[in-house]
Length: 153
Image (tube, rainbow, N blue to C red; front, side, top):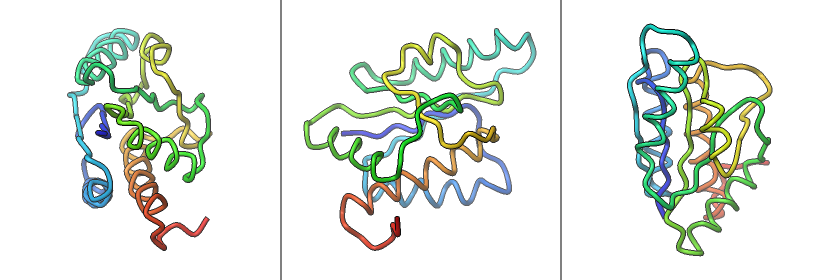
């Protein structure tokens, strides 16, 4: 089972090092593939969102379950994320792809196609910060599944 973290843009300072650290840690627990697509520059907002979302989804292999990150999504606990990933692994599922849109989010089409819509917070946050939070939660989920002491919840 593969975990794909698909995001618009490359992280810059000051979050780049923290994101790399947690993606490396998460990769010790899950076969983690990080996919980055370039941000679209110029044009109207609707076209930018559609273009970025289309390129993200194109990088997700067939059969991999899509989880779209959006502030209007469902809130999962760390334990629920761990159970979700563990169930995928146990049942031999091809994997899960977590989609993080750019500054304008994901297209309505992408949100409707995703099997799950996940909210990391009811706050609006920059997509780089969302990527950091997700990477840390993927790492935390791995420690929960293995019964390691990192998670205190």
